[in-house]
Figure 1 (cartoon, rainbow, N blue to C red):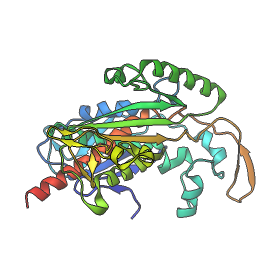
Figure 2: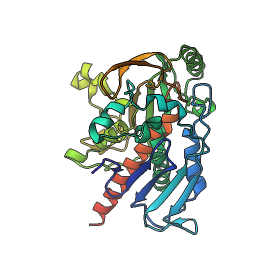
Figure 3: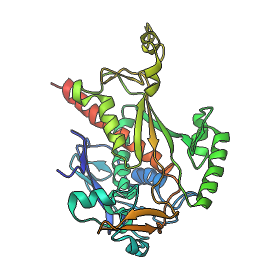
Figure 4: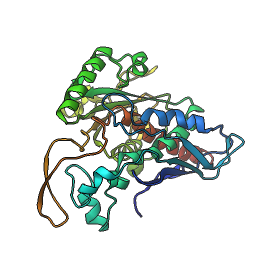
Length: 352
């Protein structure tokens, strides 16, 4: 109940609100005797920390990780790992005038309809700040995958209508937007500044590549690997669509074009995106997600209040111009959690 937990053998439960005292995650099912420190997790957390760059929220949070349980003498014990991050730079004042308003594009109306109560401060549980727990859990999952030489890379493929023309993995870490095309990154930064001056926001596309995934991960029928990956990525608030491999392009292909030929050295192309029949085939797993614009814009909007009366308002507070690039590491985290879960499920099957 509640939809706050995810996974089967590697299972996570996130908790906390945007303007509450803290947020965090409980991870159950992490294998024992794995080296793990707060620094390992902090490296991932710093990638989604607010207050970085011209398009990012000015909210200043250190997002310092505290491991409360499950680690002894630098190694996992096999018991639940509990991770906490305290909120430090909270200012709920701008949200008071929106206490009884339903902001367009937000979960205000739906949370009120479901629960009859909601935390109006920064979106409460529906805030993107909830993803802190996902990233922390993803950092643990990545440590598990590293032992199997499985690597996850994400990059910005499009932002504000500007798309990459080339992919140079060496460029990803050189730009704030984690874009593999330097020229496109420059144009994206310019677009961010333009839209910020207008008081508006931008959407984009994030691509995720999984290297080194062995064949055999995933379950047939309902727990297909792509189905679990799609659910994981679609559970991120700003994600509105997902493609795997060739994605929607397959709708215009012939069967002879879509099928990936298999030779003695393996698959000769990868339109399947590394998954066949819901099970990984050993090729790179290729994922692409559409990220909607941040709904908190500084332009005047029409809405209704709790009494269903029309109202005009402007969103105040501190907000990003785009969820990209901070969302990139969240996407990586959710992919890592799914792969770790299926890896452990496969190992359990092989031990039978």
